[in-house]
Image 1: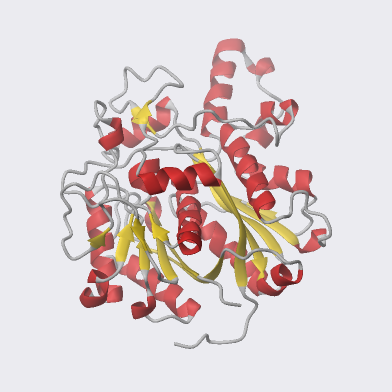
Image 2: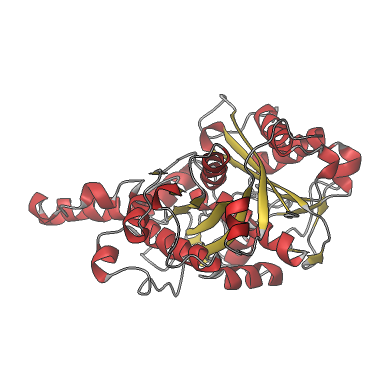
Length: 419
């Protein structure tokens, strides 16, 4: 298949990750390849009265090199995660500090599914316990979903577009896809793109557990996230952020940047079916996958790896597998390795699509695929699930799926860059 028209190409020149399995890209990637879990008992508050008491917490996190104490105090944890991930993505791209670039050609698209969940709950507790005069005058700023993008624009002199997007669990992929569109259409040369979330609060855990969406393996946290396993019983809520530095290919080459991968295709659709349940036909997911491949100018048989959404919920995994069969065809699907990062990180919600895109970029760079943890009894025998340790791989096209509550579907096609 040929690309439909000549257009500016979008490449990845930097990655930054804050996650339950590591607070740098290198630590994140090492943990994924080793199959290490970041899921454990919730420790940040007393969860003893909740039906679900496990999650993927970010531990050992240090914001001090990227934020002033005042900035940190006036930010929710999801914002702090995003800023630290973005700083690493810029360093990795050789742009920290971002000197010698046109600030009006520099943009940021940082999304979130839930936003400042922790800060909202904290300020509500202040209001109820100490009265209205004790509520922070920065409440409207620090709880805004666009706060990471706004703060990054101030810190790095981003004079081009800056905004937040929100598409539930597809947010990170949508942010990267829409950021790529800014570059393709000539509105920016460099974009910080990704997602961040920290919804490990008592309210969010209780509500999502009541929706029957979370695993209740409280006594086996590391075994709780089980994508495509017959014994799966729900996803594991997790926190974190992932940001990519996207750049117009010619701009990256002129400054001598190392190109890690290309964002070759993107598409997004909506099921228009139900607030939490996916369309049982999988039609929206199928359209998104086909749309992303068409956008990349690639045929289904070109796909060499699938980074599955793989939440570990019964319906999502089953419908995703059926959609993959329809798009790739059963014969090619059997030959295409499938991984699912959430088996180790838990579900980082609005950050998950960006974290999984980062893992796909690293897989293209290092020619290795991380395994799916806890898939001891695979339900889908015709899927080539990577389950017995990391696998060497020599492909050049990754299909990265992200689906979310509200029927949001977003798919990225990431490829090896050949100039």
